[in-house]
Image (cartoon, rainbow, N blue to C red; front, top):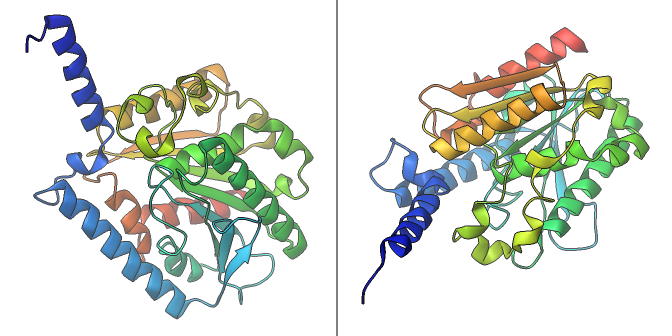
Length: 304
């Protein structure tokens, strides 16, 4: 078989894209990507179980009609007006779960912050537009709950694909304008997110997501408008790991530039976390002293 130079370039580009969008291949903590992934699942499983064992909670609250549309509230014994962190897990919209994503709750509980963990249906059983809509349904539930409780403030955090879903939620000005309780939205933490899907559809990730090419731009937060967040004074923290892939770091920087330069948002923060990869940047949330808790507590003390 003869491979012409142009064909070889395409093959090389595809191979490079595959690596760029394979976060486990960039970690320096383990000898193989499989060990990175296994450690992550083991770690968040144990930390999430510890949270359930130590934090009063209510689990599997339905916010929609399909099996994945459930959420957990941890810290149910805290004062009604406690601030709330809403966590949306990653896994390229096809892996991980609500049950494995309760690990931020215990350190936050000690600072009298409730945690709500959102679950959603996964690809390929659900399409990406359906998942985006499910997160909107969950947010409607959260804002209603926050309004009923008199919460002093609601914050969203999303990791990887979860950051994409939180960003899509933030871009929906009509939803935020017409949803009771959304005035309690204070900030968002977008962690190692993917904000531009155009390249991703050409990788193996899309085997399960099955995203048509023509949907890539409409479903990319990088092409949305966020100017409405300015009037709300919402703070947005964009974070990535030093040992994320160059593409993941680039996407975080470009999304920051979109918000800062194009959408003219002022309450913007970008940080590439030293010595962290795509996974321990959220694994650390289970520790008593972690940067998410520190950022959140600082924001609460400054603004609430």
